[in-house]
Length: 176
View 1 (cartoon, rainbow, N blue to C red):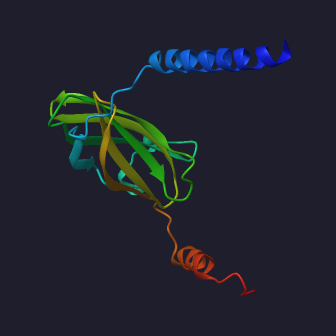
View 2: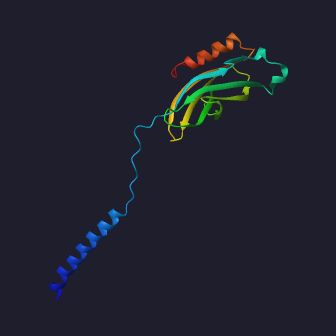
């Protein structure tokens, strides 16, 4: 009796594996491959106005608690040859502390032009800010990135302070 059940169990196991394998492979959904012809959006003609502000050009009311109240206009041209630009994003980043960024989106002014006026509070220190702008299209693809700079210059920049900073920046770690 034992000898006759082994071949039967073997055939039953083989049938279960074949039917189970066919059922599991037939039930899989396939994800279509992405369209390789999709084009990414493009950004160009970044304008930052003004591109620098000197503290001496500000009125007393524009300086509050050691911060300069500055208005900066950003604009850029964004296009997508095979679809629609969903959003144009910007990042405004101080060079001395990249973690203190300001980010947001530019509004459609008159497509393909996008822009925004930023009301900023910047510290009264000599600082260069990097502005990065990129677009995302209706296929969720991001394109190129354009960059520009904005600079704030305080009134009391002394030559000694500038040299001390340069010496600190260029000093090698093994120098004392």
